[in-house]
Image 1: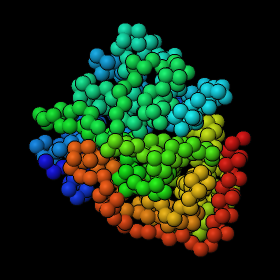
Image 2: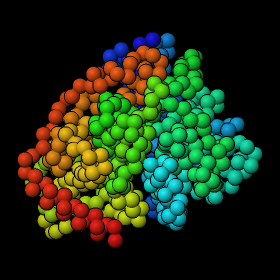
Image 3: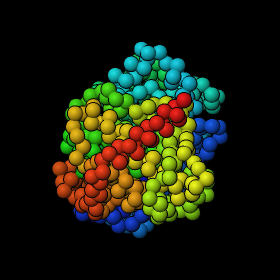
Image 4: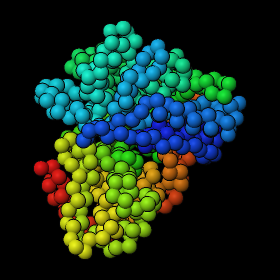
Length: 487
């Protein structure tokens, strides 16, 4: 059995990839888009059944291609923080999944006492924000009569997307999550690696509705596909999977993933230190009996901003078109964009901020607007990198990149210029799926953790401009726009 399948259940699509585990090389893939719904301002939902059915389609497509007898296992990675509630007996979801971007519980989180916010910070490494799962679960229990009814009957299950999919794929035999996904709920003690009683009481979440927690390299049951039971082994949240797939296994190594949002993770080893700059402390991964921690900064909107250009404004027909348009003008012509569609994440943590497009004149063209949107992604990464350096005392020498937008040469070069460090783009750009495949391989004894960094191959290094004053000035102008968005 030479193949491993990586299931990547992301925010806008579900994908499955076949890898030759002996080389770590991509062999075949399947993808299905997943719709999002926006029923109220700041609300983001998805159909959990759609996520599952498209997961099953992608997995079956990959198993058919590889041959069930050749597949050693399935690794899972997923959008984090998104909450699904379902019936333990039938596996049917009770309501739309509440997506990580959803801000419906912002007021609830803002109303938590200082003591409660301190408890969240010290136990979980997170800030008390609607981004994370706990307040979403609380909202569902308060507003969904069906959830309360199942809770009383002892039939309610609540979990993140990985937990829900594993439950469905194993026909209800496994109700479990891994430490990285659990660490994003605001209910998990990241030092003790267990659900925290004080936090469960704070948010009013009964322990019995939550899954068992396991290390990333644990086994999570077997999926029934193509007439065979295939082990599910190796589970990580998407950003932690990218960290693992990029080979950032030593303290001080970091990566940026450009997806729906933008995520910078920085390996801190066994040190579980709280940030003083608005960053998050999170479980990086747990493997071989050891737990590695990471500092994380997240911008809620990155790729979603480019989607907005395409679907909301109709300025481009395809995301790839943004690169040429941005490069067709020498600068933004004074236009500045702040991508706060669902508030601003680290280091601002302001759920009430909204997107801002400023500096428009009669000479502004769609190319200027498109360029301003791409530049805003790079500025968001600089916000995070500066905080990382202050928290860790380590100057970033280079950053590894992955995700869809890393294919955009204009953005990657501008990112290097704004950060003042090299951006290292790998040959294998789907680091999230690769990380899940490699963790599956480690869990099944098919590869060794220490060999993973050696497998990574750089495709191109983007070297920063020496015009530091120019790019510092552009960044300062962006920060002024952010202040206006925060008002």
